[in-house]
Length: 421
Image 1 (cartoon, rainbow, N blue to C red):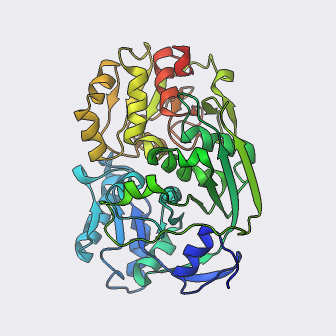
Image 2 (image 1 turned 90 degrees about the vertical axis):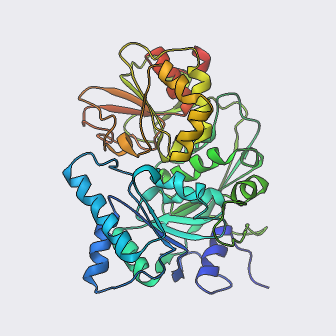
């Protein structure tokens, strides 16, 4: 009988054609999906051509999404997207998303059923780890690794050690998966899970909707993790069934599997969390961050631009207006989310509150477009990073929070929780 394994070990072993993998082993693993965007894929496409490759390993499994600087903001970004378009046409790729079909990649791929439980997914984007919420091994890689995977369908990986995070207790109103992950990063630090798998479990996780689970897995990389992951349960399977484009396999960790560290949190008294500049580990409860005046509030991104996030923000904003001098920007993550928000009347709530509603895009999250900060300006955002200069000028500042806090702060004109209103 083989030794007990974590979910991460099992998925990697299966994709390397083995029954068991020790953490630290170097493996050559088969890739289910190889993903690139308009910033990272052009480099991969150049490397693809430089090695003399003619065809991708599988036109159904190489996915390109033009989401970072799209709709194109300037000539350089237009050229980047043009490289994607030309390559997608040349290779007859099944999954190329641009224009009105384009959404933020890490919201779009799960929504379209391109990724599923048990998959091994690599993406030339650090937040590829989002798909771990489905019970997949998903990790960001460099553009040359993406190029190699596009040619061969394989990727070199080191099997990470696993850390186990157990969350117990009923969440208070306005507290979300974003707060759980911010609290966790605040506890262990931005290097607290370096090249490790962060495995999230416990009764709190089992009660979370998928949108909150995606938020948590998304920010595993902010703790230095190789991947974040949750075992699929009924909520996962309800989300995946009817979407999945391929058969999928559910894995879970064995009792007695080895973890290098285990943390248990009782989150029943947790309040909404805010990460102060210039690091996602600089976390405080919202009650300790009041009276920070803001110029901009951004609700969106691959962390918090999903339907549940928009509903939460609309609940706070309904019948209220953004404070004078505060720019409120709402970015639905995909066309489907945009349409659903429109059909549910959420876009009207945002417009009545004085918001600018952007088409789906990564936009200001990476300092791209649709909301860049000037010197001295302060933003609160539902994005995942608040490094110096991340959203614009090096002398601007970004605070990270959940959509309810971002919405409440827009109304108050300063960082505030929904209960302050």
